[in-house]
Amino acid sequence: MDLVIEETRQILREYRLCDYCLGRMFASKLRLVSHKNLGEKIRKITKQSKPKSCYLCKNLMPELDTFLNKILDMSKEYEFSTFLIGAILKPSILDRDDIIRSKFKLRGIAGIKSDVTREMGKQFGKKTRTKVDYQNPDIVFTIDFKKDQFDVKPKALFLQGRYTKEARGIPQKQVSCNRCDGKGCFVCDFHGISEFNSVEGHIAKFLFEKFGAQQAKITWIGSEDQSSLVLGNGRPFYVKLINPHKRKIVIPKKVKLGNISVLNLRTVSKIPGDQIKFKTDVLLEITTENDLAPDALNVLEGLKDMPIAISENLPWKNQKRIYDIKIKRLDTKSFAVMMTLDGGIPLKRLVTGNNVEPSISMLLENACKCTTFDFHKIVTSN
Ligand SMILES: [Zn+2]
Ligand SMILES: [Zn+2]
Image (tube, rainbow, N blue to C red; front, top):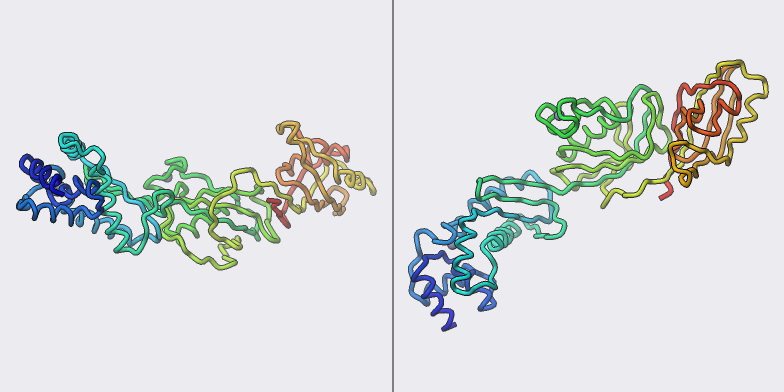
């Protein structure tokens, strides 16, 4: 302690420091954490008065409360249980901190920047009853002391659910805002989309309202036509919600959004990275160019268990199959097919034969066209 007092006298003769900065210089030497109390103590022992302005931090440390109150205020809009505070300091403060530390050979001690974030984190955690998390915080506050700016960044939230579509004429995907191409701008309220008439639009709008989120990035398990219905247990999808204000919303098991229903929507820890394999039960309505002979459709039974080659896929990926097929004749130029098949087989092209082999047109030796395809069941295998 005597040595510390002597060193302190030396520092204080040259530089006037606040209790925080003074304490920081000696805390690690004395194996203490509370910098302010230590600074106060050292000042009493060395009989020094408090300076009006700290040479090093220009009173940033004693006046941290102002900034703390600001982020406390901002944080009220958000739901979180862990946080992290970051700081950008003026280079002149960092320089003075370095000068004093090297001049008095105090290299091992914490810099002023970590002292600012540590002190604010301690106070903020106490007031909000939340915890600092350096790895994966729910929310990150950054204070730029250089520009007097504040930034809040809540962690993205992941959700998983299914949807059914009970009416035709609703596209699956929403066209991006044409001003910003989906990046987000004032026109689209930073959502990246400005209309909400698709499956994507309905789901996104619901999530924006529920979670106070800015954007919703949806990963679909398979796609459909605007004219397709999605029935049964629905199509699975994942959502990455950007900048959510809320994190703990309980969503009803079934949410009706116009002619779309969202089922079992819940938060998950992440979105699976690999392509998800799935099988679907799909009902196709098909018209033919020429009249169908009475037993012409029987040949289609052969599609069962036959590998389907899709030309743009690499050969090793040609593992797609039809597992079950039921055929119903509707009239001389149309029929319906109910199939269970691997996800990813392009259904319209399976009918026409455009770069898909074998195809329904090829087997029937009759040019066929798929008028509608509806999904009755979608099952994921992982
Ligand atoms: Zn200071
Ligand atoms: Zn926009």
